[in-house]
Image (cartoon, rainbow, N blue to C red):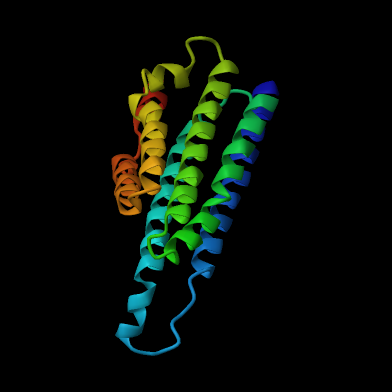
Length: 199
C-alpha cells in the first residue's frame, strides 16, 4: 500500500508539472501578435519575436523532457521534493515574460540580462531538485548513480552567468551563448532513462 501511495504521489507531481509546462507554452504563443498586413514582408518585424519564442520553446521542451525522466526516480516525494519542484516551476513561469521582452527589445541590454536570469534560476532550481530527490533515497540511489559527475548540469549555470555578463555590453554575444547552451542540451539526457532500464 505504501508503495502504491508513493507511486500515486509521484504521478500527481508529474501531472501537475506537465500542466504547468503546457500553460507556459500556451502563454508564450499567445503573446505573438499577428501582423496588421497580409504579405510575407509583414512578418519581417516579427522575426526577433519568433526567434525568441523558438529558443524559449526549445528550452521548455528540454526541461520537460529531462524533468519527466527525473521524476521517474522519485521513490517518495516528500516536502523537500515538492517545494524544490515548485521552485523550478516558479522560475520557469517567468520565461514567457522574459521571452516577450527579449523579442521586442531590438538588442537592448536589460531584456538580454533578464532573459539570462530567467534561464539561470531554473538551472539552479533543477539542480536543487536533483539534490532533494537524491536525499529522499539511500546513498546509492538510481538518480545519484545515473547523474555521476554531471558536468554539463554544473557548467550550464556558469555559461548563463557568463552570457548575462556579456549582455551588459554585447547582447548579441549573450544571445549566441543562450542558443549554444540550448543546442548542447537539445539531445535528451539519456543517463537516467538508461539507468532505469537497466534495473
